[in-house]
Image 1 (tube, rainbow, N blue to C red):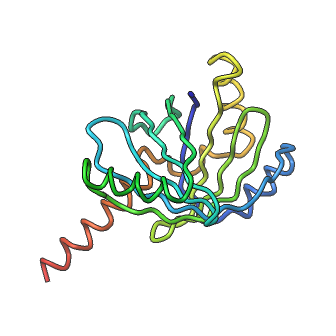
Image 2: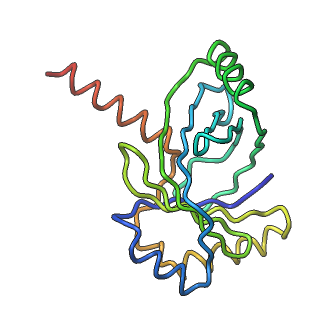
Length: 181
């Protein structure tokens, strides 16, 4: 699977929700997600628990760029027993790294998922993911760029790293400050 991604930091979601409605995007549902990341020799590897009802193993690769970037990924659905076994095995092979907890409001417009994410300890973010499997990459880029313009996302700080990187950096900074005092 392949998509084009962009992440921006926002103070809140009020304005973008109005713009999403004006655009004609459809709100799907709210999700409570817990992502457990593992140290991986290449790419990113995590398990995801969704609304305490479903589980996934997710592997993805993408560059750490502030601009829109192409991400390739694979998602495998797990049952609860498989989730625990997978976490145990990955913990032994790669070591658990960081746990990201977020509330995600999912909106859809054409081939694009718009995530309004409230990430615990990090704040509010908007993620665009334009799926580039059913349409060619040029069409996906056009759609992606049009949504960026319509939602006025270039006014916000673009984020190059994953939530896991941001949370780990925050944790390291806090630990460093504690050692200094």
